[in-house]
Length: 361
Figure 1: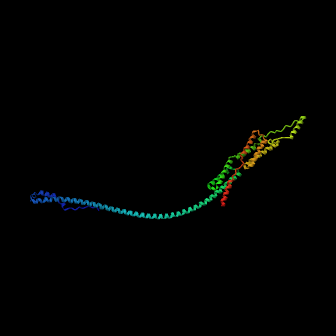
Figure 2: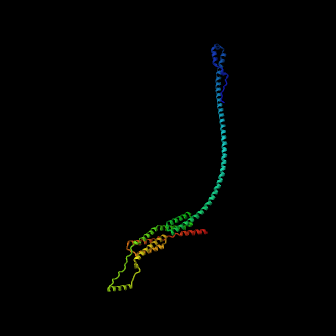
Figure 3: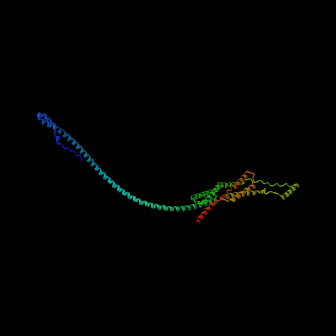
């Protein structure tokens, strides 16, 4: 668009004033002309010199203006082309954005539908879960109570029939844990009874029942080594002569009346064969006490141990160390009373009574 600019050539610009002067210099006859003729060239000379300067300035100004116009036109055309291209790109992008917006709207509508469906499903699941929790809570409560009752029954049976205080105590502790997990204040009396029963079982467990039974067996095996009391029979009086006769008469008279305190009971005199039966009967008595101890028969245990201690005092030499040790062992057994089992049936009875009241209501 910005081609070459052709400037117009002014007519006065083709004239050269210098040849005219040279021509005047070459023809001296012209200088001798009239004064009017001399004055004429002088008046034309200023016009001929100013016209080319003005025309040059005008041409340069016009060229500058045209150049500015050309730059402006070219800039405008460049801006127009660029702007149109940017508008076309923006329009394409706008169309693409509108399409993407429509797709997003469709996806959003679909997601709203799916979200509403999920909310409905969640509400259904929550209601079902609440119902399930109620059913599980009822079943869990029933299961905990049934398990607690079974544990109490096991504890009572293990203590009565097997004398297993350790396992019975563990069963009571497990039952108390079940009631604690249940958290129902109605069963608080059962837990109080369980606390007392567990303390009594702990005290009973500290007794060495197996050690006592072993000690009874050892005493029964050592019966033959215990010394019997020496016989203190009166010596027979010497026979012969009047003195012997008088002595016999005096002894008969003394035997007619005899004063004896109830505490001073003479032991019966034993024959050699009777000593054997004494030891065997004492041994059987100790074995019976051992069996009664292991089976929890308290009265039989105490009766046998008491009788064995009395037999030792009656028929054995209490002044010897083995007999004194055996009597001391019997005294310790009777003081500890290991055969007396604690009563742990109260908690089970109370639990069943509470369950019966709840079932009746």
